[in-house]
Image 1 (tube, rainbow, N blue to C red):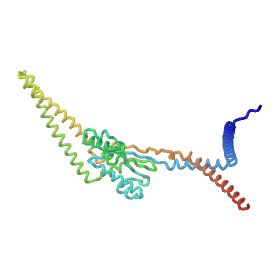
Image 2 (cartoon, rainbow, N blue to C red; image 1 turned 135 degrees about the horizontal axis):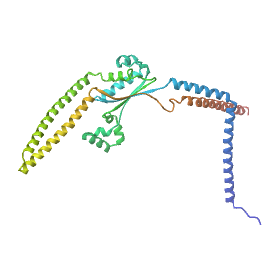
Image 3 (cartoon, helix red, strand yellow; image 1 turned 180 degrees about the vertical axis):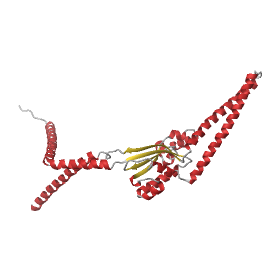
Image 4 (tube, rainbow, N blue to C red; image 1 turned 90 degrees about the horizontal axis):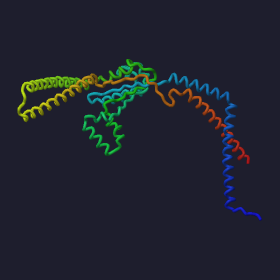
Length: 331
């Protein structure tokens, strides 16, 4: 007695068979294409070898002759001169783009200006320094943060220009010398009559405050010595009077401490006030790196071989289509 196979099971077995057959055909096609590719490289090994050698040689030559170097200067603009600094950097950048070597050499003082590729300036984000001892800045940042993304606010152009330090980056196509590029640039940035006058006034004010504070500190020292002498010579009988004098003495000591701290701040100001655009550090000849920079000797051989394979593919495709079109026309 024969057993009849249900139609659903039969259809399912056929579907599985078709899927297995399709997968097998897919891998067969992959294997065929890999084999054809290997055959292609074997048949054209001389051409491929020449392309690899030419690409490597050309890439090596470009890697050696087209090196780019970055020079970095960290600066601190004084006397609210940040906008002035950014405007000057933008001016120099435009002159580099215009290839105005005369301006760069005569006005700025850069030797071999043709080696310049670009110049940029960016703030060094330091929100903690921005709000340090400045409650108004903290409240402003807090208010702006309530109405938007804090990260965007910190990086915003209006906010970032208030940061203390900024990084000037100069890109050149040859090794740089500080006497030929960075020193002339800093001299150019510090040539401004308007900020020179502000600098002179600020320095004079700082020195005057130091002298005034020194006199006040000397007076306080005299009061402290007098009080010490009185305390040693006689015992205070009235505790209330002693308490009052002791409270006043604490105020005097606190005032002296505040003045001493202020003196330190003024002396630091004088160190930083010696230049309008104060250079903090300079780093020269950082070789530029990236996907392309320094790797052309590896990229070019692959690129040339890929283009050759692509060209061969298009030629084969064109011939195949031409044959098909001819057959259709004949029919």
